[in-house]
Length: 100
Image (cartoon, rainbow, N blue to C red; front, side):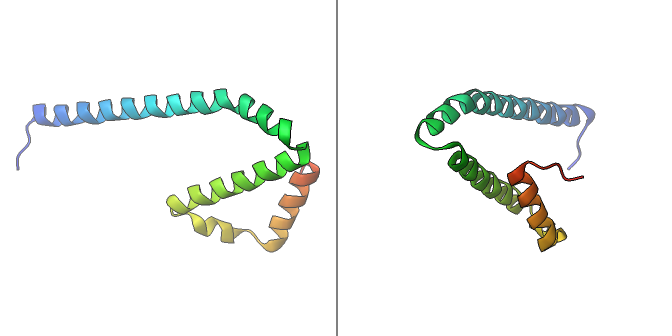
């Protein structure tokens, strides 16, 4: 199948439009999630203590990280850290101690 210059330019324009729509979609999702965070936090803090809220958010962030790495097929990155590294990260994040 032979393509001429105009066919190639048409294909590139379609790809460019797809990227524009994709970027608008991600911008919309970011705005909606960023805007709803304050409301969600306020609702959660009404029913939970601060420490319970932090524990739930840590759990959901960990699950989200795991799912993102799983779908990107980068789950092997978990194995790059030792048990000691995970322990150090969990203690320093819980106590909010900088890890230099």
